[in-house]
Image (tube, rainbow, N blue to C red; front, top):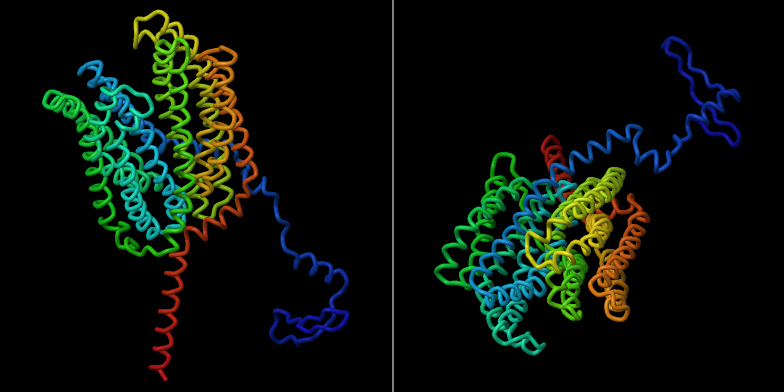
Length: 531
């Protein structure tokens, strides 16, 4: 090719080898053709790249994928709530004092212990999810060990709180006998802190790889053992035995999941040989801690807000009836919460996997399909709650006042569920993009700056009682959802995919670089030997 100041000349060589080679200037028509073909193809808009032509087929395929993950997670969450109900039932058989003390102790354990450990473990979702999408199994291995070690460290201050909870409760006005029973209950529950430090990372490690069926079976098997263990220990040790049955059941689940991981990782084609178990460095710890803080804060803010609702209910004029109503209504909410928690975990896993695989369009699709599915699920859950409000209260009590209150409050709670489902999934999307602080800001603003103040004003100043508390929470949740949906809509998915490559692909890139260096040196050695 020759370049002149004004014209572009090319060497023209026909297919006939005997034809002489000539140099000629192209015509204007040929110049235009060259200019047109040399231009890059037009870039399609993000909408045409993200949403394919067969939109319905893509949505159905994504729903099918998420259904395979969500159903086992739903069954696992239901087993957890069933275990709590069984524990409460056995406490009730021991007497009124044991029931009150055990319930208070379990509430304190959730408030100060399990919410913190679950929140800290939430940082594993984006790291392991994006690492699995990038096929960086070293990152999964090292994160599993780091998260376990971090949770074990966190149990030290939590244990100190549990051992002194009777003094704390008495200081805040609780009765001495109930506080001491609650402290005794937590003392025998202390091993469950250590077991939870192993159980939560194992669940997150498997669910981030879309492996949820083994978690379901192990949880179901643990629940099957929970009833006979409770029967034996409740007769032998009373309150202490019921408390011990909880961590013994969790220990069975941990052993089963650990055996599954060891067997599957060491089988032919397993990932154990990928290594990375002890390759942690300062950068890895900083990356984990940077995500742990907002994940933990988000989980704790959400859990604590509902505990505040119960505490505020106890301050109402008809406190005994109001607490009974809210306890029965919240039991139905726990069933729906297991569904929304499963949907949120699916959204987080799908988004993080696709971003780790550098598939920004698929991550976008997964996020919005999850959001649409959560909206539909919220409406279905609300309709189910409205349909069950006539019989739900009678399952727990024969008090006509409480049953009427349950029937009335479940209407308001149904509206809350319509908002709560997409809110939980938006939080899962934020975790999947490794930006959990978005949920932190939304929860802090929606729950604590809006929901709680409005609920107090409506319940006590406007004298609306429990209905005012629920209306205030509904307003706060709606504001929180608006904030999170605004954050999700403004996500630049290609930028998030690029960030995921930096977060999850560093070890893979290092391995490739090392292999290239080794191959280069091998080639140089072979060339030198030939010379």
